[in-house]
Image (cartoon, rainbow, N blue to C red):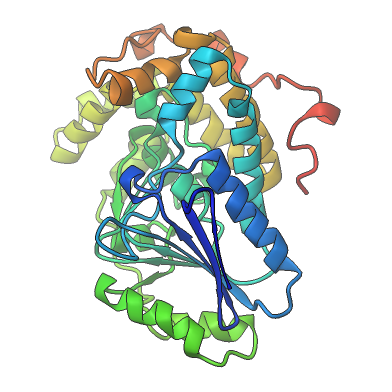
Length: 366
C-alpha cells in the first residue's frame, strides 16, 4: 500500500510488515510543513493500532535518490511570513509538531530513523524519540536555532539536557553540528552504517518475514556498528565553560581560553541572539528536571513568546529568519545587541505560560 500525501511531500507505504515514511521535499531539504506534520501524524496514529504493522521506518529523500537530507527542520520561511501576517496556522504548526514529537517518543512499536544527511531542528524532533537512531558518514546533526533568534525546541530541552555533563548546554547554545560517529559519542544516535548500504537495508525490510517488532529492530541492529567512539570535543573544557552560571560568564571564560576550540566557540556565540542564548540556557537547565510532556509544554509557551512577546517584525525570531533566509544579509539586528545587556526580567518573561493549565494547547500530553 502506498499513499502519497501533502502533494507527495510525504510518501506513506506499508512494505511487508513495516510502515515506511519517506519525507519527499528534497528541494527544501525535507523541511517540515504543517501538511507534512499532519501526514506523518495520521500515518503513525493509524499504524499504532494496526496489528499487521510491526514497526515504523522513516527516511528522507535527496535530490539524487531515496536517501539524502533527512530533515533540515521546520519551514522557517513560512514562520517568517506567518509572523508578519498574523497567520493562525503558525500556532497550529507548533502545537501539532510538538504533539507529533511526543507521539514518536511514546510510540508503542519500534520507530527506526534513518538519519542520513542533514538532521537539524525539526528533523531532530522526529528522530530523537526513535527506538533506533541510525547515522552515516554523511549525517550532520545540530540544533542551530539560536542563530535565527529561536531556541532548540521540538523537545530539544529534554534530549539535549540528557547528554553527559554540560554537552547539552554547549550544543544548544552554539548549534555545533555533529557528524554521525560524533552523534553516537554524544548519545544522540545508536548505530552507524555506510550510506551506500542504506538502500539494501531499507529494501530488506519489505522482504524479511519478521515475527514481531523486536525482530525488526534486531535485524537493523545486525547491520550496524554500535560502538561509540571517544568524544571529539574537549570534555573537561565543555564542562568547565558551559557549567558556568550565565552566558556572560561563559563568554568571559572563552576569551581567556587559548585554544582553537575556545576561539571557534566564542565566534559561534557572538553570531547568535544574545537574548535567545540566555533563554536557551534557562530552558536546558529547567528541562533537566522535567519529563518530556512538561518540557514540551514549556517549549510551547516559549515559542509563542518568541513570536508574540514582540510581535511581527519586532520578534527576535522574525529578525533572525529575515537575516538568514529572507534578505540573506546575515546581519541580524539583535535586541539587545550584547549579552551583557540582557536582563533577568527579559528572560523570565519567556517562561510565563501564556495559557492557564486547563487551556494549554498541549494539556493532553501524558
